[in-house]
Image (cartoon, rainbow, N blue to C red; front, side):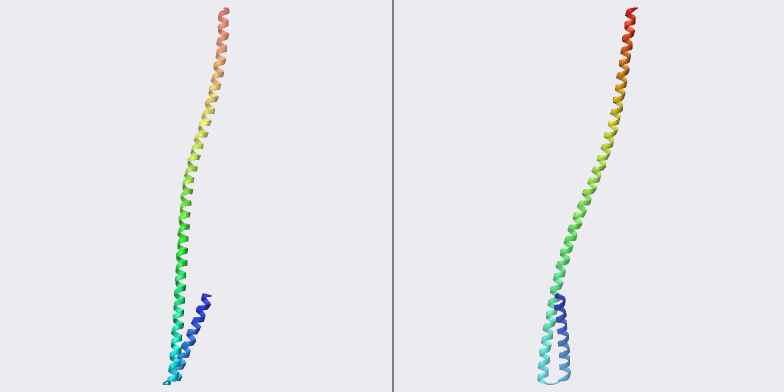
Length: 142
């Protein structure tokens, strides 16, 4: 509607300008022609004034919209930067967890290997005790 209003005002301004020009050319020196031309000129000035006011209002609206858009853009940029920082921190945490999990897995494997060795040694100790026990009995018999 702003565009239509502006178009109507511009059309009126051009029509009045043409009427003023025609009146000035046709009735040089006539009091009535001068009065009519003066009235047309006043209407032309009023129409131009309305056009300028409308344009000023439109410019102010556009400036507010641009400021609002810039504010939203700035907020969005800040939010994206915050998310990026959180993601980077999360990735660092994940790397730490992966390293920790790898260390736990290695320790678990080492413990399992150690347990196997302890079981093997216990078995050997049992066998050796049994062998020593058999030899003691043989010595006692002898």
